[in-house]
Image 1 (cartoon, rainbow, N blue to C red):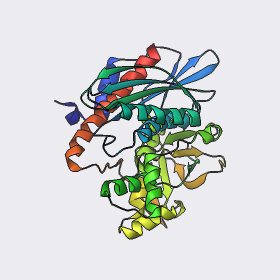
Image 2: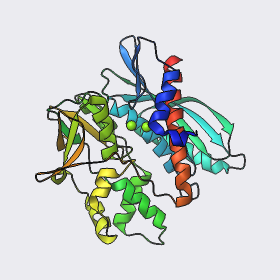
Image 3: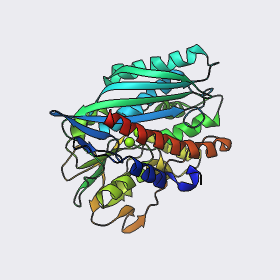
Image 4: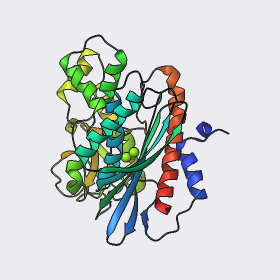
Length: 341
Ligand code: MG
Ligand code: MG
């Protein structure tokens, strides 16, 4: 049996059982955006995210500064989605021996830009030879209230923090490899390369009952809330905001808007549930039951758990499937290592 046959969730489940957590200071272990540990009067948040050449990025196509920025953003976003502020990061590099120095220097410059913007410091790391570029960042954040995927309650509203669908359309445009792009296309591409984690919303997140950052796609990420909170979430289709650039894109290339709004990953916007008025975009509600549903007029449709469909060339699809599992495995293990250290 290889890990691909096992599937992502069974793999994680089996491995986690080998390493049980028996520590009263661990408030949240596996299975959320961050692990959470109580230290004196504060809650520390731990997360980790990797960027692997060939599965997350193509070296010839990406600006290394954007890569450093994006790696930082994905980590900060997980901290923010648990109601925390990012504080410290560690970096682990796997680099081919013949890699141009300028490439990794560029990645560090991108991380520096992110540090300055988000307000954290990188305080350690290590480097090893590797067949492809791999950059793994672990991050520690801090909060006084942990908000997870498990707190959604019937009666909550569903909120999102902004427009969705921009990252997926941006990636598709990049892969079209056109000589020239229209202005709206350039803006969408920039959304893919330079997503911004919502550090400005930490105080708002702390008001919510549950929260997740949209990294796999709205529907896939809401399923995580549904499963952890044991609730039913209804998205009201007509309330989903449509970004004018996405609308132009879908018209020009004859695409369905909602394939983007519902399924675009790497958005790094937030989905939250709360019974309060949060001042964000209200797009649905939470009920008793199970599943993620889309409501259009009086029609209610169950939405499958489909995640972020990466559109890298097909020869990389298989590789992507495999490294997705490895990434998660790596993530869970490091969560634990950090928690135990
Ligand atoms: Mg997340
Ligand atoms: Mg993450």
